[in-house]
Image (cartoon, rainbow, N blue to C red; front, side):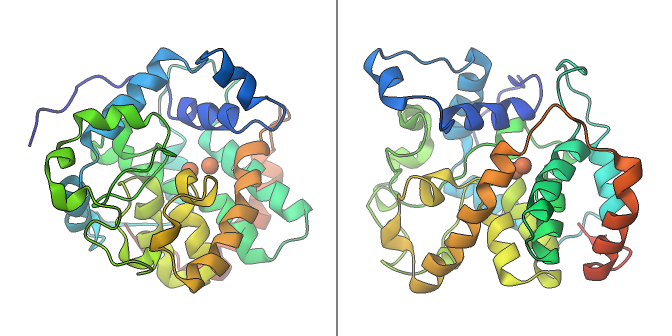
Length: 285
Ligand SMILES: [Fe+2]
Ligand SMILES: [Fe+2]
């Protein structure tokens, strides 16, 4: 294992979310930026991606599956996790940045306003709780970031593909072919994605939620697949149906941010009931 960086480049995990939102901002002309070769991404976010692409190897991901896969960190209720995550100290401006609970509530409330089913509102509310990984000492690059398949060639549709030059999987020819360790059309369930809050939360919640919700949670950061259409050769028919739900979910995650802060006090009874409809008082993490 190579030495891991001690720096945590992002001031807050939200800085990554903000960068994704900017990248896919529908009001911004992508071509215009490309043309002038102007990258407006903050240097700390670029540094974050550099670390992410360097250290997310197949071996690293399989190690995290072994480490977290059995959910033996302990038991915690959804609300306890939500409140714990809200204590995450970050350097960002408290006047303009939303707390984790507020982002979760805004996502869920936007889904609710559009009349979607209760399980989808709940999914909006809990989709980012996997960021609890922070409290297990995981570096930022192993908690957030656009996810991508490991164990096969990197797509140039992944943001900053040039940073994979420093990834050790580069030197394993078996991991550098189009399909790598996978079979064509094997289905996403057989593909290992870079490790982060998505895969972790999927594992924590999968037994309690409908499959559409599991896809939303597991793949919501996989922009190369659900947004850029990369890795189509690894998908199966079932994925193609289910990914539509991930695409349906994505705008609520990206664009529900508003200046009006949701009132937790007012909304709490509704969400307490919703959480208890699907989850027992404590679940394994
Ligand atoms: Fe997320
Ligand atoms: Fe989110």
